[in-house]
Image 1 (cartoon, one colour):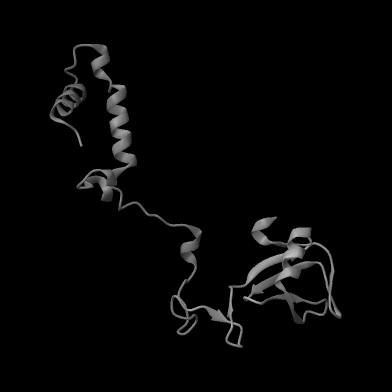
Image 2 (image 1 turned 45 degrees about the vertical axis):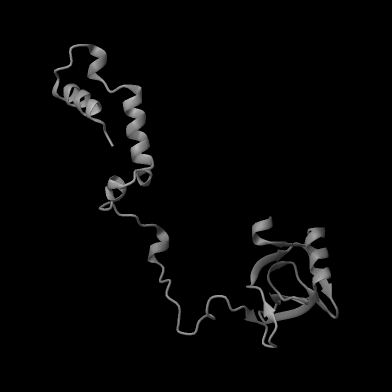
Length: 158
């Protein structure tokens, strides 16, 4: 917010009545004050300029997506999802196997997969060569070992 002396200097400068050449331009401090007011409008107690640019559209490509959920599409906030046996599970996490892995009697091919974890086990889901969805439960220790060896990587860990 401009002080009375700043308002007088700005009026003199914008009206063309400034006598000295340096008075015809805003000072560094004036520019800095303006930049701070524009950058941190909420730092002013009344925050008068906070809604100054409301008329400008703020859209992104994500706005074209319908983000509504179906009724009952998720549990209420604070309730963990479960694995169908009443045990809490984490949300599915996309991952990638960098090489084929043998789990018990099944060979899991290299490629995209999904990890879902509970307190005792992790479930690895993938699609086989025929396009059929497959899954196997593995121990958390085995999951940690696959991650540590670099055989399995979560999408954000690459």
